[in-house]
Image 1 (cartoon, helix red, strand yellow):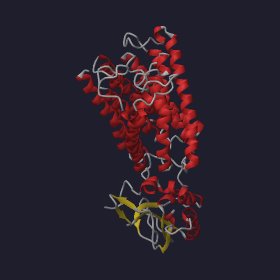
Image 2 (cartoon, rainbow over the protein chains, first blue to last red):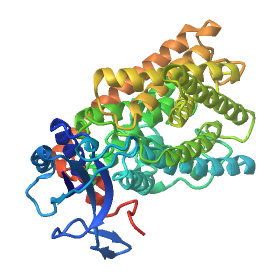
Image 3 (cartoon, each protein chain N blue to C red):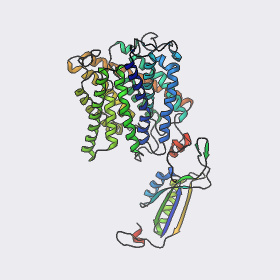
Image 4 (cartoon, chains in turn purple, blue):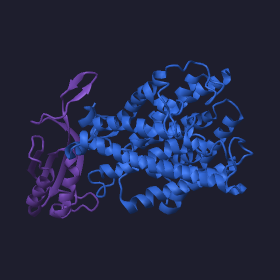
Length: 112
Length: 410
């Protein structure tokens, strides 16, 4: 089992969701986050004070069984890739255990 | 000169003024969170732009003595020269001419702001600014002259429009529909649901509109007297009936009444009663409100889906349809017992007024549609109307104004 964390541009979320649906990855967790990568993004201006701080990003988290790891990565790439700095990153982590709270199921059974 | 009338009209001008920030919040709450500032900015920009245009030449085109054929006002009042503070007896004999001018200015501002909802979330700001300046000068000012200006051709044939059902709502509504079709749908329009991002703002905006509408309609009596009180009551009554109607329709069809529904319905009622408020009885106002709400509900749910145009915030469905219904309803329900300066409508056995109202409607709609097409094509060819796709996805707040409305962290 793997735990996949992707940081993407907020406005690519719809495309990524669509690609994941096509790859039959239905369970995802999404949050709004701030981050700093290599992108020089849109600067915000307030009363002449320019703010080049942290940029708004979207974080996607997905837990998958081994056979879904590559399709998930491909789907995120397809939805979020533009080729420009700031597209984001995908992190793949080993996942030791999953427990479904409702039924007590564990491991690969609990994941989907 | 009457100090009571003058005080009333100055207060009403301020009431109509607050409708524009009201419509900004109403629309802003319905937009997505990445675009709310662009809506507020467009409306606020219009408040500045049209205020200056009106003083420089807008008021003169709309209200100065006619140039001939009832089509345009002359340049006599450019820069408000030769006007003075004494009353102009053609328009309002008991208040300073400047008070009348200021009251009319607020109508010119709100009319432009109403259009913002049609091309919301995808228009380039520079193109927007140029388009609005051209539109208010070449569409709004002429129509205002035809209907309200001394010597205007529609004033001559006896059309009734108490507070601007056609001049304000139909002109903006049909122009908005045409612009929405020309600029095209927002990215992902049919694939995703664009849910309103902040309904409390929309409700706040709707409440400000209702509040300001008393100035819009009752102020159009241009005196602090019985007719103003009458328009005040019919306005409130139709608005209430229409809000309730929309809520009941949703309750029945969807299982629950929604706040967005009741506010939209109330707005439909305000619009429908606008041309009729000084000519119909309070009971007729109830009927006008109910039917106006039904018509607008069908327009935004059935008509829009069927034809598939992306009138983002339903300017046509609510203002266009509501204004058209109100104009025709005036021809049906007008009662000389309410206002001797008016005429009797269909239900009192007079067919003539009804036909005049229809001619009035058709001529203004045709003019607004044709002019909007020309102005749009001109701006699109010179500046380009729509933002780049990437900018649209990121949102207009950040790409057009370098600001964002909401922070993620403290």
